[in-house]
Image (cartoon, rainbow, N blue to C red; front, side, top):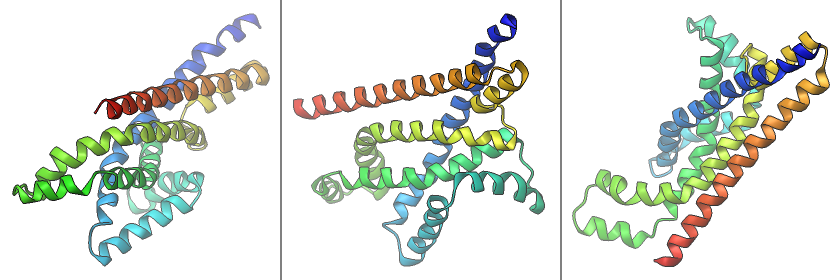
Length: 217
């Protein structure tokens, strides 16, 4: 029995790697779509309406249902995804809806005088975005994006329902094979807490550095 207990941590760490990989991939894949959704707020009424429908669906429905739709319903239209891919896609589409608000707020925080000055200098909208809006917005958005990564790590625990061997599923497997559910789930909980605390510390560090930089300016 001691041997089985000793195998708890390696198995859980493997699951943790899967959890972090899926969460980070979803965050990065959702970013371009989130940026488009944020830009839709500056577009015409039809584009705004389409973006609103997207946001209402992905923000207003349970993530568990979204995962099940991506994994079980898409094959009926000829698009069959592996569990890890389906989980990443579902989380990316979900986080894009929430990241879009982060990007929108970040872009709105840029002083309008800088944008107007750039226009007077003859810069194109694309160059204004790349050289003025994007760099400043990204700095202000970093703490919020770290917070979104925290949310993704927590939400990713649901991917176990589509047979992804994440941290939660590994804990379930360890509990079933060792008959030690307390140790298995307590260890998984500890890992989630540690990851959450580390991400929170990173977000706080970024916030402090940004505040010091703004004070220096």
